[in-house]
Image (cartoon, rainbow, N blue to C red; front, side, top):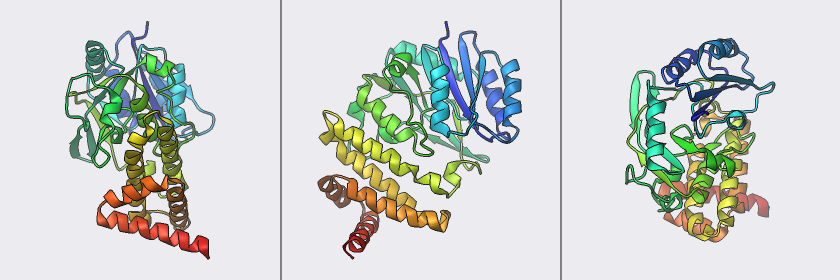
Amino acid sequence: MVKLSVVVPFYNVQTYVPETLRSLLANTREDFEFLLVDDCSTDGTPELLRRAERELPGAVLLRHEKNGGLATARNTGLDASSGEYVTYLDGDDWVVPGYYERLLATIEELGCDFVRTDHVQFTGKARTVHRVPVGPRGEVLKPRETILPADKTTSVDYAYAWAGIYHRRLADRGLLHFTDGLRTAEDRPWIWRLHREAESFAAVELLGIFYRRGVASSLTQIGDVRQLDFIRAFDQVIEETAADPEGERFLLKAVRTYLAIISHHLGAKERFEPAVARKLRTMSAAAMKRLPQDVLREALNSMDLDRSTQLRRLRRGAAGKAAA
């Protein structure tokens, strides 16, 4: 019986694949499997993965004939997995030796639906520890009770799927799949759904996963239209949260987060292609119009002056064009 399934999507990351695979090799166990998903790479990644299929114990190689994006690749790996527990890793990141064994032991000891962990973010030689924004450590909690407060960074804002481990029963309930085709912000509807619908989780003091930033092929570095999928992602967060029996309790948090992300992208519009920057403004204004207007007003009133002014100006400009 497979105890742990590690789902690892890859797309055109041949420079980093060897380091990722070495870290998996240092985490093998006879009851671990590694679902290596090649999302139709066009560089040397496929050959490196074919070699890994032969040399990495527990490796299962899966290949897309068409590039589908990170969310779809994760779903492919999840659907092919058989472990009692599941975790994720991105194809350009890595973990320290023995990390997955310790992670597995932690969730088995706690007996909860899922566990969230801290991580190390690195760019070049710079290293920064990022911690789960949950106060109690090693204590089993109800996920929905950590969504609020609306004006603070909370557990739903720590949206890294790979920073944790998840019991198979969550997959059986449909809580571990990602929205197919989302090219960015794919973790956001996923983390919100997990916190609304799972029954128990814990944040733990376990450091061992390294998250690489500044990769040239990463969508966070590319200013094309795929970046705008964050709007579709957050529309889904709003829709599903509003449908929750306690939706009214959580909507302000969801709307504030949505607005904060819109503001972030507007403030970095110089990295977008000109046509995409214009589309960003148009789609953001339309998104604000779709939000519950009473909650939108409350959210704008609660934000800092710079962001609220920026967003109100966008909203007024869109209203003026519509009137004209």
